[in-house]
Length: 232
Image (cartoon, rainbow, N blue to C red; front, side, top):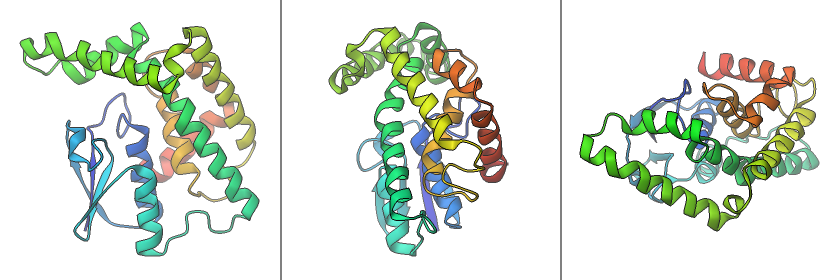
């Protein structure tokens, strides 16, 4: 059986990482049975991050490579029924979400004072006092460095959230009145869109991206619909 390696549930989500939730959805959408191994150590994955899966003696990291493995090993087409143009649009939106909106969410959780306070409690309060007094600041510094190297961390708070708000508006406009992102049935795009929409609106701390998404009833209904289908 496939083993999916994840973090532990947090923020009221199946997993705090949208990429782990993406991997969960990919496996469920493909109809593949899997078991879950939860860990606090991202080095459990072959690329030093999660998610990862073990399947047939292979350890595969990165949610997009997991998708590719499922497609190749099990012959499942996540974009079946889509035209070439629709497939291209789905790919473009996924890249926008994973390469930019992701970093806005990182800022909201790891840099923004309110989000950082919740993140710190969620991930570090169970550690021994000595470790707890040192490790959070070290990890936050590492996150700041990664954000600066990627580029998002070079912007002001207002600029960062403006990027995210514009992305949220684009997602809402593209979804329109469709039940799922690309049409009447779930597709691979939903495995990216849903984890980021729910990851913005479900956690109990506020930021401009959450406010924007909650202002689009189609996004709220979409998140409820996908959650009921895949995580109900």
